[in-house]
Amino acid sequence: GENWNQLSLGLGGRDVFALQQTESGALLAGTNSGIFVWEGLQGWKPLNVLLPDPPAPAPVSKGKAARRKPAPRPKPSKLAMRVNHLEVTPAGWFAASKQGLLISLNRGKSWSRAAQLGARDFVSVRGRGELVVAATGWRGHELRVYAANGRVRARARFAAWDAAITADGTI
Image (cartoon, rainbow, N blue to C red; front, side):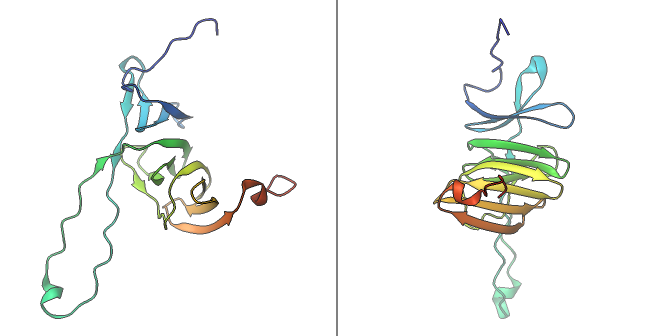
């Protein structure tokens, strides 16, 4: 490395907080405002389609209210949040973000939020097989174990990370 070149074409001045290589060799960047993929001479291209959260279940009712049409589903929006960490697994792509854990099951074409249950500010995510572990620094420290589909399988809170890690380095 005697000479270094900045490869920021397409990032629009965004700061990069995470880099991850996909199974096909593509390079992903998590920035202070979204996720991007490196496309060589074309530079960085955004992968920032954020699908809307699923609507809350409608209350069960009888009579006239039961015949009402459901509200239209919100349209996808632009993923424009800080991404702290990226993880690529055969089960999906995962992003630890300031607004929660994000999941893409279609190689970054679109992203959806995993079940948050009040958690935000995820700082790290790791996956193995069908399980994903995400860590947050919000209101103490919390580890959450997710299935690859985004459903919470387990969670634990700690006052400090050293309380979560045993002498042999396991959690």
